Length: 245
Image 1: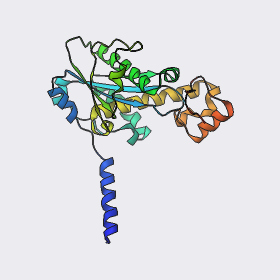
Image 2: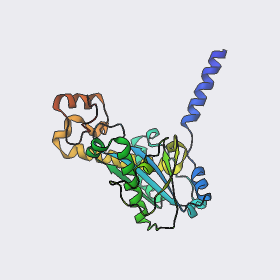
Image 3: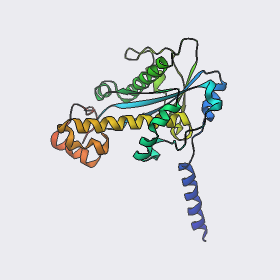
Image 4: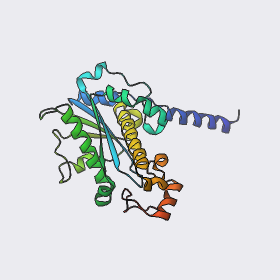
């Protein structure tokens, strides 16, 4: 085997390894050791879509339960799973969490606020639902893991549009947390399935939406979707502040 061939094989093996990283509960346990009582993983879906809401999933576990928890079988970043696999594990993942929720911001809110602030509000709506379901009270500490480099949650907290969350989460950001942290992977799958189901229901519930084929593209900018926008114009569910065609 030539040196070039060996290098190609090595690079390929490293690439496969990067995509086969199994999520763990390591960061979740680190936050528990820092004294947080509830740990919440967050991930977004629909940021780049042309139509429909943006959603942020939140999956929570009590720190006291982490020693007895195992990572759910097969969980991964939703983008690395087939639609069939996501659907198959959806209910099991919801049952694995102490609580989960998906917050959303509408296309009109995205147009009015911009995507970053809309994501923050969606995340706060999700954690508000989780904390109220779990009856989280003042005095408890909530640690959050957010996929990506930017903490859009803390920036939106306390603003006029934000819900009054019982306990503001202390946010830790981590790039590719959706691949390495089990709670974030779980939130990713829950959010993706929830949004996909909504877009399919919207596509099937109104015949005027049929040309945009959201049941296939879920509101993202496929060639068919963009062609329909060019021919028929945007619907009330399109993000009209975006470059649609």
